[in-house]
Amino acid sequence: MRSHSKNIQTQAVHAGDRKKLADYTPVTTPIFAASTYFYEKAEDLEAVFNNERPGHSYSRYGNPTTSAFEEQVATLEGADFAVATSSGMAAAHLALLAGVSDRRRKIVAASVLYGQTMSMLMKVFEPLGVETRFADVSDLEGFEAAVAEEKPGVVLVETISNPLLRVAEIDRLAEIAHRHGALLLVDATFTTPVMMRPLELGADLVIHSSTKYMGGHGDVLSGVVAGRAELQPTITYLSKTLGATLGAFEAFLTMRGVKTLPLRFERQCANALGLAEALATNADVERVYFPGRPDHPDAAIARRLFPEGMYGAVVSFDLEGGRERALAFLDALRMAAPATSVGDLHTMALYPAMSSHRDLSPKHRQRLGIGDGMLRLSVGVEALEDIVADVEQAVAVSAHKAAAPLAGD
Ligand SMILES: Cc1ncc(COP(=O)(O)O)c(C=O)c1O
Image (cartoon, rainbow, N blue to C red; front, side, top):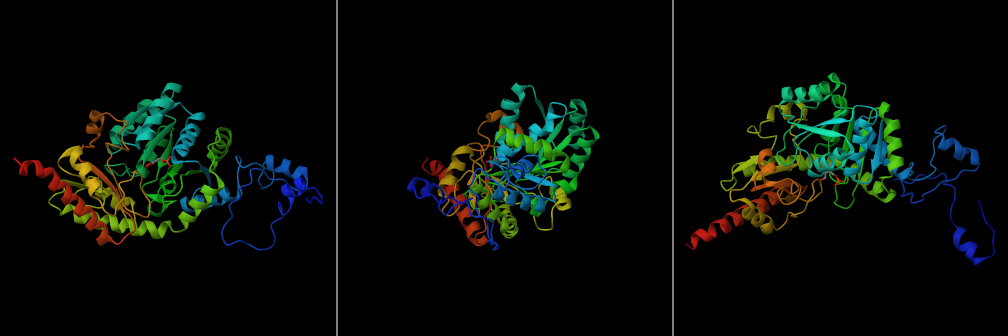
């Protein structure tokens, strides 16, 4: 399509633009910012709308940059398809809706989930008539009894829970869900496909907050749902109808992050193991939570399900002294960022009672085992000795501060 107008108004709008892509291949997928696409013949556009030929028509329906990211994730997950979303929460929303849309409008979910996911189940789905029963995934018998009783459309679990880092037996949970006619939806944000591919263990849908390890650089918010072919039409329909689509720029950034995911994540997991070992021998640390340590209740499950030496890159620990001590620890960090996320290149520390689990009452947190002195570290790719040094000096400073009032007595 070429305009030969002599009018500057028309030239400004059309000159240089809308060229057909040439015979070169850019080494990375460009950011296709265009919201709409057209073809030589209008009937080709119609064929795209009808899914009779590949192509793009309107970016909420699909975009070349976003599609490239989706293909990348589907390949890594061993999935038949993937649909990118504007955040991890949008991915959870889409997958849960897809799960209950043609099935029983009931959900059975792990009793410890990311706080906002629990909030979505209780404050968005429940008022709409989709009830959730929470059950402990670490008690498979009890969990199956809950599934048998509720007969839900969907069972929702996380591969590693936050911040206690309990490991879900995805293969057994898939059997339980399927025995009672439910889909298994797995939030695999904390494990990534480098450590576990839930679809291969029987899950039906897997979701990620790709804001975290996949993006990996703390500069993008995105999410993704991947799964088996039967669920593709529903997920695709819901995505384009609800519109929580991922933008092309964000898809580009996340795709770039995923290219180094295996390198980063292997290093982060190794650093986490090293840090957990150091903290376990630190007299000022009350308790360490890490599935790679023999004292973790799910150590055997972690060894069974995860590749050797990989137990995730999050380490939680308790400091005696509650909230005051935990805040003193955060303030004393010199390298690690006291920031609310996981999965970035840099080490981060978070106080669950103040951030990820602030919506839960202190009693509810206590019941789940999340104490007032608990901290969670997302371990980065820095040199292990620097991470250990920073965390240990902050533990020491916080211990000193906690002891200070006594010294003045
Ligand atoms: C396990 C898990 N799932 C989902 C989410 C939500 O992701 P997002 O912040 O990208 O919406 C988070 C965010 O912290 C998370 O940790």
